[in-house]
Image 1 (spheres, helix red, strand yellow):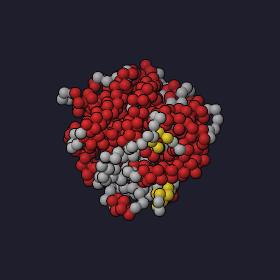
Image 2 (image 1 turned 180 degrees about the vertical axis):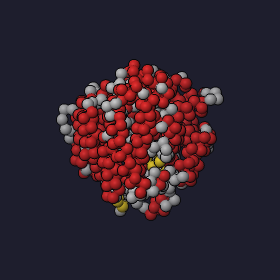
Image 3 (image 1 turned 90 degrees about the vertical axis):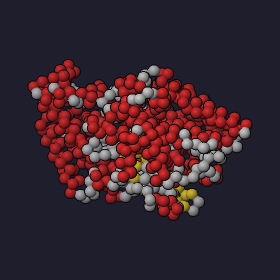
Image 4 (image 1 turned 30 degrees about the vertical axis):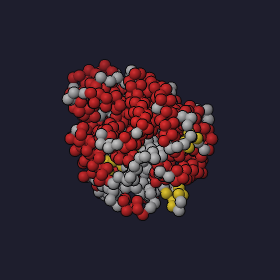
Length: 630
């Protein structure tokens, strides 16, 4: 949204190891040796260094350009659209160029900080950049507010008559959707400036707290990533030790996480109330350019599917593991028959690029640029942010991908996921800064499609029923993590934000909300110990992007339907798919999906997408029968 604080969390599409919103440094020398061969991104395409002349020049230019822009146009737009609409088109172009320069600065500062959130020099660098860009942004704030004060008919007439203004119609149309929720300019200015000492500061506190946590596993002290990795270990005692240690550390830090959660939820409630949003998730729906009833239909369909998806699958998994009940630490356990051998980086690269090239040589070529040009940071190291993301930076540069690669099959899927984002961001860049940014719901389409291509490519090479079973099971778990768990997270967030209206929440209340949605979504086969109640504390999306999580379920169900069209399509699907990606933020989801015969407003659309998950579980049951008959 135009009035959001875009400097508090630089734009990225974030994912974690056990699903899009869950992940986390391995302490062993063996892992350190492997790390040496993993790429670390080169940020020189943005700026040569933190103290470079280029960076300092751009910082100064942002202040000067934004002040000059304000003097040139403030209070003049309503007259300009009538007297000289071409000049208004030029003003939008000038605004876009300034925004791109500021975006370049914040991208660089954010990526530097992400590389080591525990380094005080880098933290200060990021914080200083936020302050300076927020100050410069204050001089531009008037522009979108004044544009939205122009009468609809006057603006439409000007766009029809002026090519340079008509070019920005998609951006202007999107901007108009924010109009009912905009406030007086002075209040908007206050919201913007206070974000530095408010929401963005609490975001930083969360990030730096998470990066500083240490978990004692055996004789080692690990950060969150390798500790979470132990939850996928074949040895049950290793999983249990990791799960209990995670619970212990999160519980010991629950006062901080509870304070952060309470503060940010209240901050959001104040903002929503002033703007006139009537539902706790309404601002997210608006930012995603998605109708609330579409999200409600998605949530309802997923919730109704719990018995036939997650409940049924985990009951099967308990049987495979020889257990009557599963403990919380068994959820991500490998199957006894699965081969969880480590996959080295070059093999992971080959797997993903081969899968992409099977769909489109152009798609593979774009993805290969990330490897060849050091646009990927895959190393696992202390202080680095957990999880994974793809950050588009600005159209004049290129995206960057961050993952924490530890050689697991899921890490390969994470790589495929983030490169899907990267390809999307490269293709959409031609739309320019203002129109290349895709709503989260559609942004997840390309990433999940990249995963699906990689999975299907690997599945086609399965050499036995046992191998096929292991691969299908892994895919089902990934889909449950992406659909079922993300909707459960959305349900948790709704509970938190609704309850926060009545006063501060205690850690115990938050734990209770968390356990309620886990039990509902994962089914009766699981036992949970008391420490699991605190696991809500490490999910970054709850802090950085409230209600982001349903976008993953949206993307997964959409891709399930899209992939079915692809499998049955005649020639031309790839071209239509690339047009979808190239559109960036210029088209509504209904317009983008129409060429594929898909309609997200139809409740059947969601049940069809979810049916693919239950269909894979059906196939697993059939394989079980075949194996039992051998």
